[in-house]
Length: 69
Image: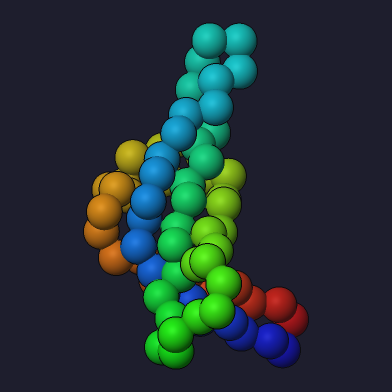
């Protein structure tokens, strides 16, 4: 089993409509880094149902856990 826990900040939430109906949203998260980087920070982009995206707010902290059995 693998478990990856990431922390960052919600940078952007965009609705991706399907036939004019909000079907899903793209959530962009900029990850926190404990060391200085020689390259620009990177983002994670997630596509989630619109109902889940309404629970998030741009500019606030986000914890993300990825698990695989």
